[in-house]
Image 1 (cartoon, one colour):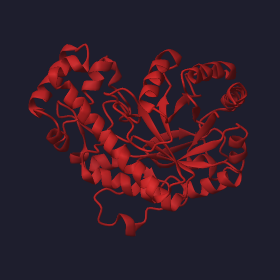
Image 2 (image 1 turned 60 degrees about the horizontal axis):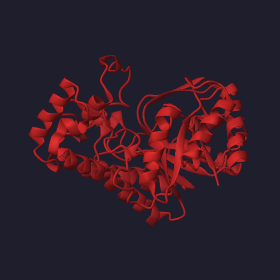
Image 3 (image 1 turned 30 degrees about the horizontal axis):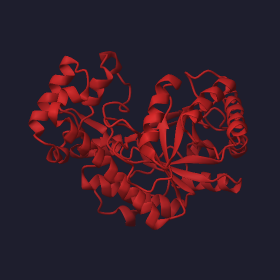
Image 4 (image 1 turned 180 degrees about the vertical axis):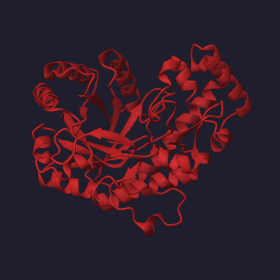
Length: 381
C-alpha cells in the first residue's frame, strides 16, 4: 500500500491552533517532525504570530538533559528561537491526538555549531579545507553523539518512527550560509572529489593517504572524467572505506532503535551513488541494517531522479523505497503535474512519498499536494 509522509518543523504546529487540521487535510499517513535539525531560516506562511523562524544554529527540539550529556565532548544545543525546551513533544502530542503518527526527523552529522567548536572532528578535503557543518563519523566522539541523540529521541520523544538524515559523512555541498561556491562551475566529479575526507581518522583508514591527497588535488584541478579515473587503482579501496563508514553508522543506529524500541519504524535518507555525500548517505554495497524504508531525493525532477531510484532499488532488496519529493519553488503550483511525476516514480518502484514541506508551502501548494496525495492513493491503493 502506498504511504505518504509530510515533513514539518515543531514551530509549524506550536502556537498555531489551525496547523494540525491543515496538515491532516492533506490526507497523509504520517508526519516527519524535526527533532534534531541544522541551521535554517524558515517561512511560516500561516502562523498567527510570525512569518519566519530564524534557527541560528543546529538544535535539539526535545529537552537537553544535563545528566545525559554531561562529560561528553559533543552535545546538542537548546533552541532560543522557540518557547520551551520540548517543542517537538508539544507538536507531536497535538499531531498524534488527531490520529497522525509522528516520525522523529533526526539530522545526525550536520551541525555547524559543533563543527566550528571541534574542527578536528569535521570533514577535511584533500586541500586541507575543513567543512565545519560536516561532523565526520570516522571519529568515535561523533558516533557517540549520534547514538546518544537517537537514544534521547526514542526515550523522550516516543515516536512512531524515526527518519535518519545525514547518517554518514557530509561532503562539499549542503554547507554554509551565503553560498558562493556555485560560481566556480565545478563538475559533479570535482564536487565528489572535494567531498573525500582526509581528517586524521579518515587518513588512518585510507591506503597511502598522501598519495591519494595528491591524486585528488590533481583530479580536481584538471577536471577528471570520473572519480575512478582520478584515483586509479586505489579507487575501489577508497570507495569501500567510504561505504563502510556510512554502513557502520547506519548499522549502529538502526541496531540501537531495534533493541530499544522494536516497534518504531526506521527510514534512512539514502543514495546508491558510491561517492554520494550529503544528507543522503550511500548504501552502495548493501544496506546491512534492518531498515523499513530508504528515502532518496527526487528534487531534481523526473529525468534525473528515475535513474537514481532504479539504482537504489537494486541495492534495497526487500526494503521499501520512498521518493523525497519537492512541493515548493521552483516546482510549479500544479497538483496534476505533481501527480504525474509521482506516478512515474511509482512505476520505477517507489512505494512511499515523503513530502517537503507541509509547513513551508503556501495555500495554493497545499491544494496541489492534496490533489497529488488523493490521486496517488486512488491510482495505487
